[in-house]
Length: 456
Picture 1: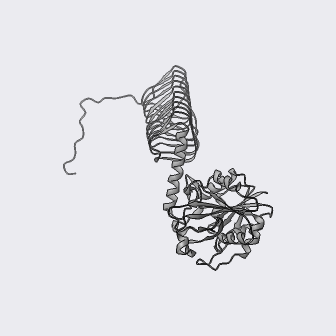
Picture 2: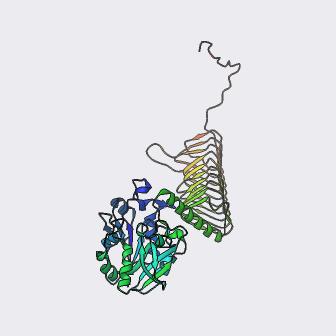
Picture 3: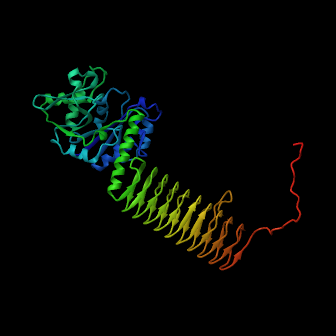
C-alpha cells in the first residue's frame, strides 16, 4: 500500500492572538507545519495532503514540497469534516496517516512504530497517558481492555473524565475505511462538529481491529493553541537538542540557555557558553570554544578555534586555530585561514584572510584579499563602495598597515609594504615600499587657546 499523509492545518488559532495562521508560528526557527512536513519525509510518505482554511494563501506560500497536495476546508466543521476534504485525492489502495499542523514535535520513531502496529486494514490510534488529561478525548475500553470509543472532553461523563489515557488525534487506517466511515459522521454533539474520533465506534461496529500505539513522550503529541504552549514546546525541543549535543561530545555551560534553529554538528570537546544561538547549518569541529552571547549562522568553524563573547558569524568559513572576537562581526563571504586573529569590534565581509594575519581592533575589512602574516592596525577601513559600485582591496603577504588607515579601493598593497598610521591610500604600493599619505604636521608656537565669551 502507498502511504498518504493528511495534515490538518485549517484552524485559525484565535488564542494565539495573531494575524499569522496558527500552524505558521515557529518552533526553533521553523514553522510548526514545516516540522510536521519534514517528519513525513523521514517516514517516506508517498503523498502529503495538507488541509487548509484560515490564511490559506500564506500557508501554501510557506511550504515548498513536490509531494504536497492542497485541500480546502472552507468551513471549520470539525476534524472528521477536515479529513473528508482530502479524501477525493487519495487512492483506495492507500494507507492514510492523519497528523496535525500544530503538533510539531511528533517523532519519526513514534510514527514508524505506529505504522508497524496492526494490519493495513486496522484502525491504529496513537494515545498517551497524562496526569492532567483536561481538554483531551478519553480512550474508552471495555472489560477486556479493547478500545471501543473515544469521548471528547465536553461530552464525557464524570467517570470518563477520570480516565488518564487520552486520544492524541493521530491515527492511521486504510483509505477504504475512511471513505466508508467519514460520510456517516453526525454533528450531534456539544460542539456541533463532525468528530474524527467517532470512526472508532464505527470500526467496532464493522469488526475492524483497533490497534493502539503509545507516544514516547507527552510533549511530542502536545499541540500549541496559545503562545504559552508554543514556548513550552520550544524549550522542550531545545532541551532535547542540548542533550543530543552533549552526547556528541559538547560541553554546555547551561543546557537551558542554548538555541539551535537549524542543524548544529559538533566534534569532540566542543565548549559552548551560555546564551548562544545557532541558525541554519552550523558545524563546529573538535575543540572549538564558543563564548557567551554568540550568534552563529550557516558557518563552518574548524578545530581549536575560539569565538569570544558577543560575536556574530554568518555565512563564513573559519579554518583551524583562529581567534574571533570579542564583539566581532564576521559577515557572509568571509574566509579565514588557519591562525587568523580577528579582534574586538572588527567587521569583515567578503574577505579572504590568509594564514596568521591579524585584524585586531576596530576595523572594517570588506571585499578584500589579505595575504599571509599581514598586520592590520586599529581603525583600518577598506573603502570598497563609491556609492554605486564596489571594488576590491588586495594586500599581499607580510604587509604592515598602520592604525587609522583608509584604503580607497581598488588598491593593491605589495608584499612587505608598510603603511604609516593615519594614511589615506588611493594608489597601489609596490613590494617593500613605505607609504605615508597624510598632511604634514605643523606646530604653532605660543598659540592662545580661545576663551568662552562672558556674554554667552
